[in-house]
Amino acid sequence: MKFLKYFVVFAVVFTSCKTKKDLINANSIAEKMSAKKVARKHIAANFDKQTVDAKLKANFNNGKINQSISVSLKMEKDQVIWLKGTKFITLFKAKITPSSVSYYSSLKREYFEGDFTMLKKLLGTDINFNQLQNLFLGQSLTNVKDQKQNVSIIDNSYVLSPEIQESLFDVFFFVNPSHFKLDKQSIVNSAKNQRLDVFYPSYNVVDDAIFPSEINIKAKQPGKFTDIDFTVRSIEFNTDIDTSFSIPRSYKQIKL
Image (cartoon, rainbow, N blue to C red; front, side):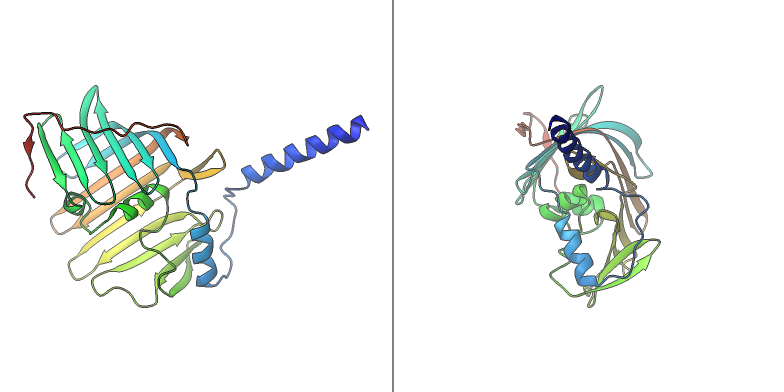
């Protein structure tokens, strides 16, 4: 009986570990599947933790500034995204909620408080809180169930795109066949020669959650570009996080 008891315990543990490991299978092949099913699986893969507390390495390049910094990222899902950039000293802090963006630069001694205009200027496209949150989570910037989708297979990714694209831009979501998070997403405005591409080269499984371990953001518009590469150094979920934010006195307000 003891042997049977230990065998059952071993089998349960082994099966549990195997399931966690198989959350990411690099050998998965994108086989024929309906757009509706791909969209449903992608939405089902959405992040289900309440908070994120991560340490990131960030490389920023816009042709004028090219630097590497450390970034603290704290998120309370659907409520707040908090960022702090440091390189020996605090370079900036930002707090984004569904209704506002607050930011200050310690080096320039200036701040911004307002809507999402600053992020639009940085990324070259309109973006709201939910879209920014999804960008960090490896989820589609727009809800793939809101519209009927086309699906194709390119480079072993399911590519979802609306049957009727928006009048101002086209969107494409490259869905990984292993875990149904994104390999890439693109927003393209051909008329204005603008595009935003977000790449997810790799993911890690932490506490049964699949989270991007690398994020590469490339924004292009005529005469300028912005490249931001994030690498996750450490991450914790469902911990108590402090997202307090206050702008130092004497800082000058940025007008956009």
